Length: 251
Length: 282
View 1 (cartoon, one colour):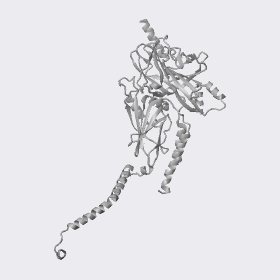
View 2 (cartoon, rainbow over the protein chains, first blue to last red):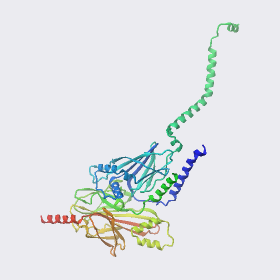
View 3 (cartoon, rainbow over the protein chains, first blue to last red):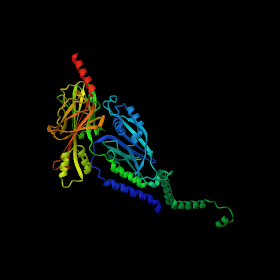
View 4 (cartoon, rainbow over the protein chains, first blue to last red):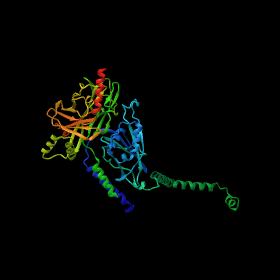
């Protein structure tokens, strides 16, 4: 590897180290508020990412109202919450921060869906709280190493899960409103930056090639022996041609 | 570009955390209901009556009760569910819901701790800190929530009033808010371990005008009186903090009292009085 090729990775490493040191040195409070009902799951899927924010719809609309200086909305029907949040997606997105290698990335709202509350009697809206799942998506920039998340429209602690699409196990972190998550390592930047070459396929072909070579080398002596014996057998089975030489040998 | 990214992240780290003093209150789906109704009770954490619901966590509940007259019953609910409590309203009258949490621990930097002491009017604690020769850089605190909510079922009478439930820090409304109205005096008493707490800051916040908060300190009888300017949902709150007892792994112990209710506007109160008068005549 040349120095020129190594330099970006080195700079990235230093940058990440600085960030980690800053985070470690920053006087975060050791414990936090009560745990709320908000949950966030970020999924990294190659060149795309998706973030699902599941939360209380009424609380979110009230906070958006307050942030925009509007009078507080009254209680709405569940489908009305969904429509309201779809309309006010840009307001919601202002309270979300997505960072790749500490550079901001702007996700887009993909959908807002109603979430089943699990009440025994779903028809009784006095006993249930309307919940929605806000799904955000965006592109993973090429060559990046880390992903971070922050959301500031919550007063309670919430669970933040980040995972790769291929792997079931993710990392879980408890965050406060406005608190950035710790960096999530995305993978090898050289493979990710290869553009059209997908890292999974490249690795597979590489492995197939190496295995074929190894098998071939290992089998070579056997093949040689086999070839020799075949040649010998063929030679011994060849019938003697009638002619001066044969007659001479019998004599 | 890289420097800009780094600076963005540093700013995010520096300004991101809003961890500080958050209020805690009980928010029913409706403050005024009818006999026979089922009612969800949300436990909320936030500021200016803007908050997030907290799911029911039995391990964190010291007491969660509802009283109607002289009867007291535990508030049931589904573990991990929101609303945290579900109430079946059997009869007409004033209902008092009380919640006392088990203590939570928190560590705050000295500057955040100072800011929160100022916001909550905890002058006595500030005075103790001022007398210290060397202050610790981190304040270790244990806090517990002491929330109450007043609900009405059907018609209530002025004789039905709030009363002490025995929470460590407790706000008690001296008038029934459902027979009162805006622009009238609304006296409240603050008790700490059953004894009136004097010189404590009590703050009243209206949901529709959270910035126009009212602030007053309790007198020697632990009383404070507000002239609530408008109807709607109100949160009255107070915080009391004491040095933690020796042997604890925290420096301070705090108690967060809250009282929520709905108040009629003056015109609504006039209509209510006329309705009562008509029903008495008939």
